[in-house]
Amino acid sequence: MSLDIDKIRADFPILQQKIYNRPLVYFDNAATTQRPQQVIDALIRTYTEYYGNIHRAAHFLADKATMAYEETRAKVRNLINAESSDQIIFTKGTTESVNLVAFSFGESFIHEGDEIIVSEMEHHSNIVPWQLLAGRKGAKIIMLPIDNNGRLLIEQLDTLITERTRLIAVTHVSNVLGTRNPIQEIARIAHSKGVRILVDGAQAAAHLLIDVQDLDVDFYAFSAHKMYGPNGVGVLYGKKELLEQMPPYQGGGEMISEVKFSGTTYNELPYKFEAGTPNISGVIAFGAAIDYLQNIGIENAASWETELLNYATAKLTQMGVRIYGNQPGKSGVISFNVDGVHFFDLGTMLDKFGIAVRTGHHCADPLMDHFNIQGTVRVSLAFYNTKEEIDVFIEALKKVISMF
Ligand code: C6P
Image (cartoon, rainbow, N blue to C red; front, top):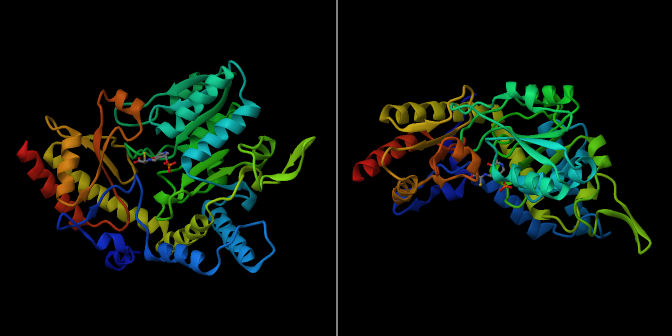
């Protein structure tokens, strides 16, 4: 099915504006996507019609808010094909989801001398929590390297996994290279050696159909704000037998069953991991974002994004820029540098043409070190982008390069 891009764009009020008197070209979707009116309306509706604190009170508003909040949990379950809704934990975002696992799984399952394998292409969110855990427990981080094309060298897992390995932390899709990692294969290798796997799905959830049972992952983390939903909402999926054995991550309201000064018992899943008042309106509006994404169809969105990716890659290649990451099936992310021009200057000048790209290390310092660079310019695409926008970007890039 081909998408009606004009109709889709009309749903996104922010895309209608001009920046420096030029139509906005928003190519920073890996950092955060924009929201359709349907999601904005869901937020407003929550605050104007049925806002109350969830799971606590007996009154109408609290009941309605609780139902809408739990409806989103069911939608997330369906989106990623989890076995049950109680395996869906709402967090602040991917970062908090990974920290939750590093703290809580780490508490129960990681001991002195244990090893955690982390890939070289990870975002800092999937590196630093493991380093903090390793520091607390006297564990070791082992790096799973990539090659110069941005491929993860998974064949090295055979030697990197030892009897001390407890977990592999790996991204589904790289936020810099666009590489889509073979998660099912990595999970198979990990499990054949009794090792658990956590997948960072921050750059995958809006662009790939996710089936956590088919992938057979132990943990899967992602953020609503990269899926056309509100910021401040994330998801952690976990296998039930693990979540049940893991201690709470934070203490407070909602996560308890009974509190006595003599000792506290904890609530059942998923509430054990949702201490305090969560982002109620954000979670409810995330439900509207999932509806929106599923109405478009993630596969339809992905196929349009691939067409845009190929179109832009061909044009950039013709210009002779250096692109990092060229794996088949890569996601709609292009990181590049231009000889003799600093990435930051390129980004700043492109902004003056109304074009939003990200520049810098993209929170992936080890990956920058691999390529011996400080940073790149990054174009990241969404289903609402167009070939005309890519043409505008290419012309602006040519002008900017000629100025230097
Ligand atoms: N990457 C980017 O511009 P949060 O901030 O918790 O929603 O997501 C963190 C995160 C984790 N993993 C990957 C692969 C990511 O890309 C991100 C966020 C943004 O690339 C902001 S740094």
